[in-house]
Length: 96
Image (cartoon, rainbow, N blue to C red; front, side, top):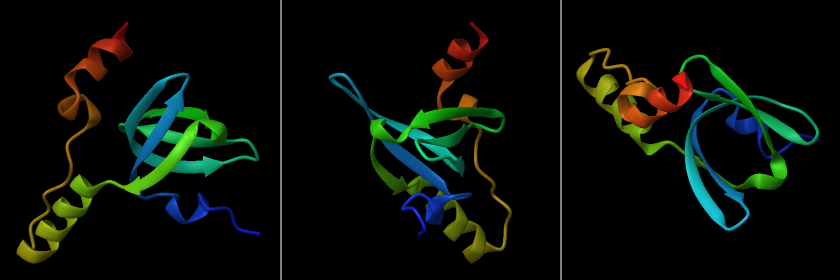
């Protein structure tokens, strides 16, 4: 039987995660799945395993959808910014 996460593999998504009393949206893409976790790519080269028990929701990353629509409508290759460009604190944290 196919899991609910399988349809999202390879797509730009935002995971709604929960840990203790915290809730956080995390943009990236699902690149794999095991029985108890998903492999999630943040940016271009940072893969992490996230327990399925922490995932509240998977949503399409609307920023990527807008860029893809503009790219198709104009015929231009607009691309998307990297995580470090969208989230400057990410780069500082990752370097630590």
